[in-house]
Length: 149
Image (cartoon, rainbow, N blue to C red; front, side, top):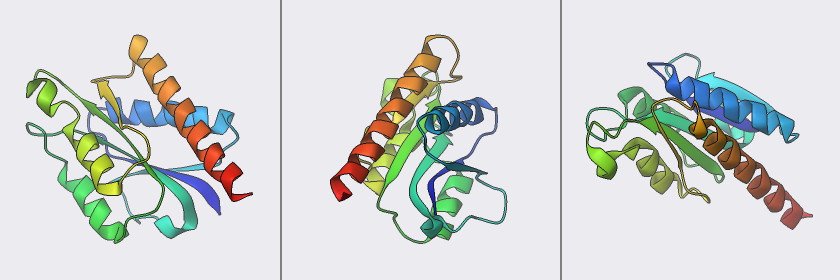
């Protein structure tokens, strides 16, 4: 079993860039990863993974993109361990709607840590934010496994 699935939707490439950084940090943390771009087929069997990281951009004044909603429906259940990240743009809806898709997904999946929210692309200081969040996911995951032993 592969510990992590990273599933993400990206149109502009920003969410994909975040997914790539997260993948790199998980691999550096000793966690095996499979990456899936949402909207491509086939949809992976999420039951084959110990945990899932789902990433989405926010669309149309705070909405979750249809392809992400379809992915969630295709999965068909709520996996136990889900972490969420998102990209957004405060110029479309301000702080109240910023990365609202990620906020909604984290709430839906009862994510154990707060969703990562990135303004547009993960460059500059935001890259460090992605790195720190990824390290937090690795620490949380390793803590869960230590509790099982």
